[in-house]
Image (tube, rainbow, N blue to C red):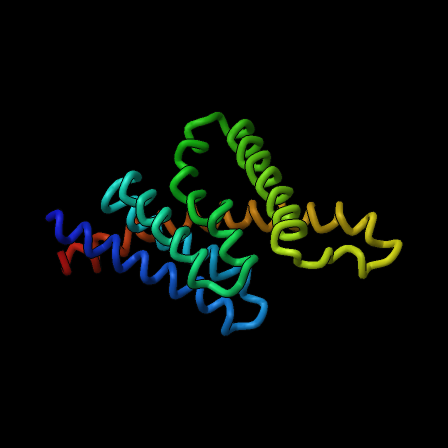
Length: 178
């Protein structure tokens, strides 16, 4: 693939990622969905141009999102996990299956705790668990369990998206364009 085509794919992917992150301010309750979609866009960059180019696009989108995206939670989720995880995932897949899932969940839970404290103390977003009264002490475990389950579903979805991209989209659509 020509260098100019690689640069164009990187630029268009960065613009699409920023558009998805910007849409979190337009669509209610999308602070978690659109950053995940923006991370999925980087799968195509990683497959076509390599991981180094995808990391450069991730860094560019992360830096631009700090200045352009109004939704604090969405840009923080993209920067802390959902932007680079699709590129890091193949490294986890090289581990044995139980260790791969364990490593993924450890990374996710570390990022989740960091996300919570950054939202609470840096951005000043009020503690969501305070409004739950006495159930709040148990809600932490329930929310953490649901978040882990959601992350595992996201991880499984990434496998399907990558398979779709490699087996159908690349040969049928992308190869006809380039």
